[in-house]
Image 1 (cartoon, rainbow, N blue to C red):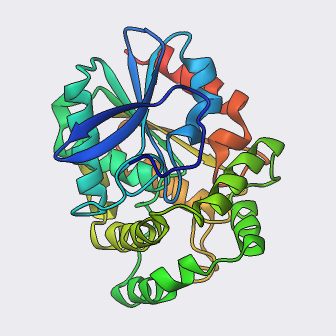
Image 2: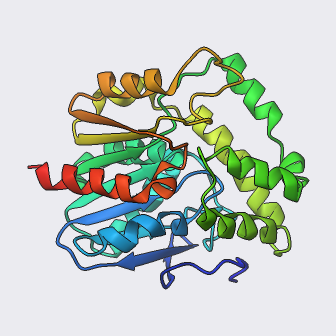
Length: 290
């Protein structure tokens, strides 16, 4: 039941977790493990520009969350807490040790839930342009839910797909063309409606399963990375006066043992747009980590 049209940079493996088929990539043989969790409407391959370098010193595992990539599209839930549970069970199945969780955007919010719900199972956290830092009122949450429907996602034109991806970057890199092509091709797969449903339910899941008020409970050493030119965080429509700098500082102030980095001339997909800088920051931080 492999309906995805995408080919990943690294071989894809499959396992069964709670009757869900979960796809993942696993590269490198280092003693320390980096568990990569992707963001909304993304997949494990979003990390390939990081894994191709970091696999030299670390065991790198990136999964497709339920609803995305090559994993089962229909899941019992699409909340960060549920995604964290799936990620945790994958680490148990693969017998991963010395785990640092690396989460991007929605995956960052998932990483926070993983750290809070299974604190003794991971060593440290890396949050890349994480969701779950910015606060939304009940009214704002409802506005966002109303704006993103399954029908609206399904009817997204090719032109809008390109514009949506452009918003993820300061300057759209050539390497992102594959992402755009893959997203266009998803419209032709047999499980396209389920993919659209997963996106809508995941947005609602992030809003209904918040982490803002829980950040001060994180005890792990944490690295926070944002692109200076993130156009998606904070929400420009609901919070036009809020800046990414403020969001980053909020994360740093609330997570006790944290380090904050901003990467110039990079957007929301900072780890893909500026892989060399991101990989260097991660490597230096991991080497300095006791």
